Image (cartoon, rainbow, N blue to C red; front, side, top):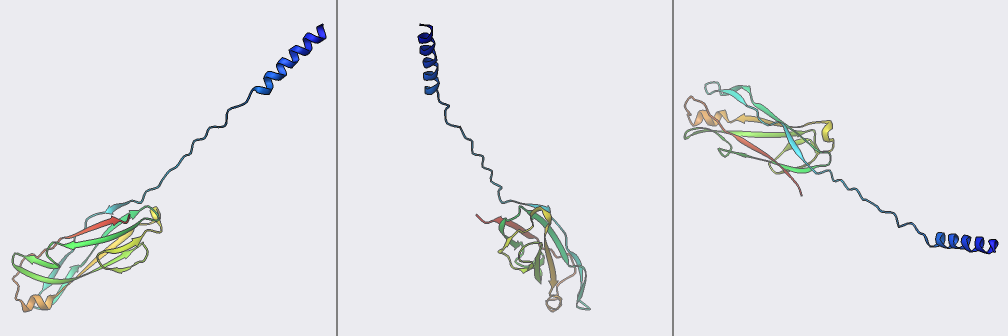
Amino acid sequence: MKKLAALALSGAVISTAAFAANPPDGTITITATVVEACEWDQQTDTIQFDIDLIGTSYSGNTTGQLTFNCVKGTDGSITWTSANNGQLSNGSDTIDYNLTVNLSGSDPASNISSGHNFTDNDGSAGLETLTFTVTPDVVQAKNDNVPAGQYTDTITVSIDLNP
């Protein structure tokens, strides 16, 4: 009888173990997205030079630089506008100028036009530099007999990320 009770008891234990099951594993998926972004490093600069209408020349600092950095792989476009339609202005008197813009530290590095598309291939490893060079039309200013005074323009530069 003892053997029968032991057999019955061991059968009950074996039977309970046969019906026990672990639930399936749970999972958590982790997803992180590095977003395209840019920030200005140097957002303002001043170009200051003198124009000599007698000698039809100019001297001083005719270049200015703005620098920015983007997350590696960021695609964007750079645009700029002149407050005075590409002219230095003193009231109603104006002096035409040519503006050359060079972009370095990005792909491609070259002279660019407003609306230029770029890709930042180096990310935080290097800054992108926009160099603005002004060449005033001194001959036009002399021919127009512009008066002495301070002539100004403001260039507004925007970086727009491509969606």
